[in-house]
Length: 163
Image (cartoon, rainbow, N blue to C red; front, side, top):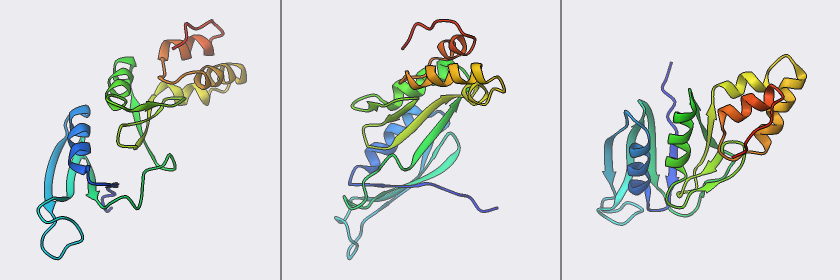
C-alpha cells in the first residue's frame, strides 16, 4: 500500500512550524529541507519545503504563500492513552498563541486544527447504555481540554469538577 503523507501549506513559516511540531511530538525528526532556487516562485535561498516525521509518521510542509489558509475542515486527531498524554499534547500544541476551542479541539499558533482525544472517549460515546452515552456526551460538550476522570464520572452519573 502506498504511504499517505499529509502536506501542510504555510505562508513563509514552515520551518518554524516544523520545529514546533517536532518538539511537541516524541520520535520526530526533519528528514529533508529544500530551498527556492533561481527561477522558482519563492525568494532564492529561502525554505521551500520540508519532509519530516511526527512520531514516525511522514508529513510535508510547503512555504506556498497566503493563498490557502488552514481551516477546521481538516484536523489531526491525537489519540491519547491517559490524562498525562492528553495534557502533554493539549498544552504543547496550544502553547504560544494557540486557541483552545471545544470538545478536545484546538488550533495551534499556525492555524492548524488538532483534536486531542483520550481513547476512552470513543468507548463512552458508543456505550450501549443510552444514559451513560448521553451523560458522557453532555460532559464532552462542556469541556475544552478533555479530562478523563470527569468524562468517566459524568458517564457514571456522578458530578464533575469541570475543566
